[in-house]
Length: 410
Image (cartoon, rainbow, N blue to C red; front, side, top):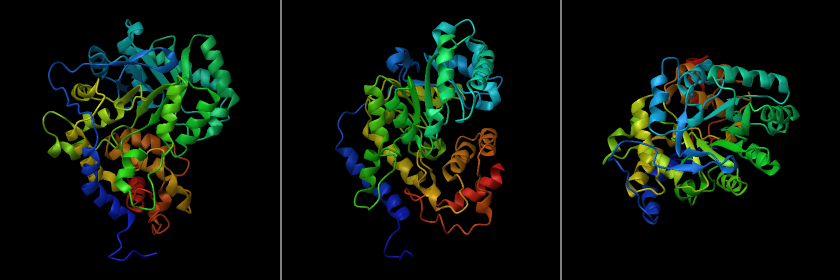
């Protein structure tokens, strides 16, 4: 159905509502905490990670972009008090684990190491064990503190008897201390809910940011006949906390388009710090991880450590960021648009790889991830774009992003 000039579509209303409507809702919130810009940037708070009993840094180390020769970055993070190092066998082709291993040998008892593996429902426990042992070799350790089933987007993966057999054996052999799952795709809530109901995770890692939380977006979209997706996520984080499952979150920067915000950052407060403070203000979140590729990034990020509330200026930065980026940002955990595609393109995953290339500026990782997709966006090159033209709940113009993504990453 066409949209008349006098009847704004969802994309227009979202953009206008963001630019004009959030300030009023923020004024009513209490508790202001300005960013502490004085003193050395160090971890200010450690939090208990559920039943693991680990006391981990509230802002922790993500290593998805770490490559050979970056030992100084990992060492800087540890020197600043970060003690939870998140990696995966797939990160930079194993380089991430190798670099971490080079740094932590001799100080293994001072840090918690996480690694992850992407599995499928038919993968045998012996194969998973082999892959774990390869990670341990790169990490130069005989155990990891947490081992996760990574990028889970199908409940069948968490139901797999082979995965559970592996976890039991690996724990018995002392190769892993705790197990969990991570996820950021369209069925995140479903997979997380199943894992919590079955009590099969000690720790969960999920995508979570201000741009996908329904309470934040409800203020933005009130009066409209559609809602922000991921309505279950805050409740599931709460459920995890009640079940004493450790909760760590990622993708907290809503795309990490940091340069967009430089003109509006003032008084020593940055957009990254504002986004982190929003996350850390939720008592159901134990910690966040964020990719740390430069020492100066670590120093900036730790400016939000220990925060429990946000200032009005922080909220203004988040408001501005949504106004600038909402119509090109694909929210983690949402796949509403995929049913509209006659070619079964994995739209959310395609746009996630685009984010890695254009926002994270890691084209190598983006190409590696894109190559693993079962259905990429090659079909978008010859499609009119009509089927998905108004399919995004948030107003993202999918066709304008999906075809260029294939040209860039194929």
